[in-house]
Length: 318
Image (cartoon, rainbow, N blue to C red; front, side):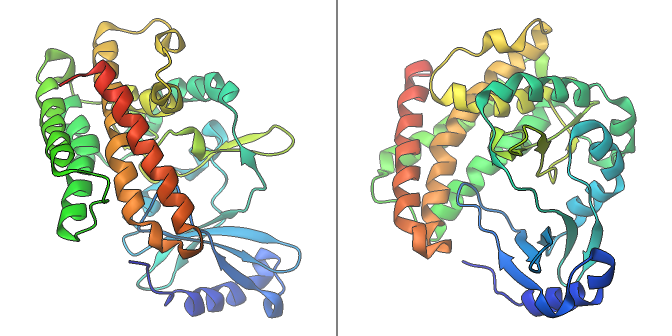
């Protein structure tokens, strides 16, 4: 269901209160919700603008992740191309961050090596990792995998079935097959490469769609909400997802890596494909959140699901 718009008036009041500091004309402020049809989040995203200046606000009813991000934002902006956080917004039930609104275009795949280089620096940044809450660190790479993928897949399928939203083109046989694949992936983590505890920070959603490129060529990395301890292999598999989905080889992109990393990457690569199969169905079911584009979103998500099935079963016939 679409989140209620009970945030608009409080946010408008907040913006008018801070208009002078933000350089906004308080009598001409407009708030416009931003909907991302490629993925769904509990957050409210919107622009706050007058006739000249525009900002991007991201709010949540559970803002703990955004607050954690605020604590390390200076380092992420100076070292890892995160747009600066300009203000913390507290509306009571909702809270979040205000950032610049960046005119941008889709990042080309030619940018992947630069993003991968940034990710490698992020993954080796001990100071940043030490600044994260220690009690949130997964006990092992296995736990990190299960928390990232297994929980997501299971939740998606549970919600589809409990809300009677399973798409009509998905058979009961396919639903049962997806459940079995989730269990298979979990079982495949029972190897030594997944035993160690993660010690590094990862972005947590390092997809190319989260790279904003300005017309000048300058680029930014956004959506750091999932910053946490985790497996660098998960970040790189997510970044390479467009190539994986097209069934293109990706090993050459990785360069020289430790054997344990390559073992974990292989399973994260498999999970990326299963995510294409399962998450596309969740997005298909949620398409009514954007009524004016529901038809085109559903067609795109069905195509993605079916393409993912073909590639997945080609490599992992079960």
